[in-house]
Image (cartoon, rainbow, N blue to C red; front, side):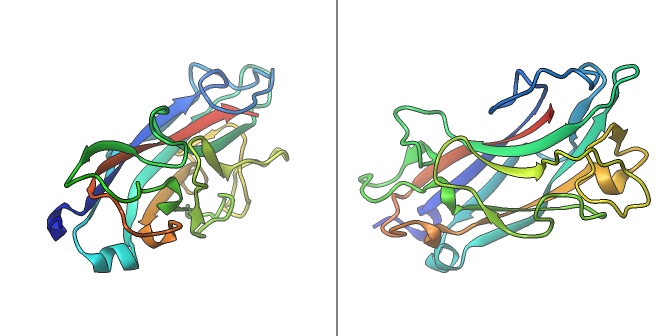
Length: 216
């Protein structure tokens, strides 16, 4: 039986992408946002590390608050109206990793048991003005590589101002409107969310979470 300190570790690698061609999913043919001046920034670490070294952590889950801070700058092309969305995706490296599982970096013991699945991951997105979809609500990724959760996805053009708007999605910057163009992400891992939750295969595992800023 493995020791508690080697039960398992889950790591997220965080990736930023900007632009229609780089982001998963459908994209329109508009080019109202300046592709060179619009950008997504992350001033925090690009790695989130959860180590489960006791059964109480596996049963109760673990939370890391304020681990990721995303900042947005979007700029109009001349005389055009920029409208953008911000979506986060979870994914693994693909075959031979099952579509629902974390990538295996190292296994401890004889390798018996269940691989940790992507639906263990919960995220909560907030900002000062409450603009994200489901602001302040814990959301769970589906147990499938490529699953997405919206942060901003609004078909209505909504401008920033006075911190009283929701789902702001027009040209702007965290430098002038930090409450609407800055996003804080908390993470929670709940191994007991797996079906079945036990037995888990002791080891070290990773997945990627991609923050994708693209034009609507």
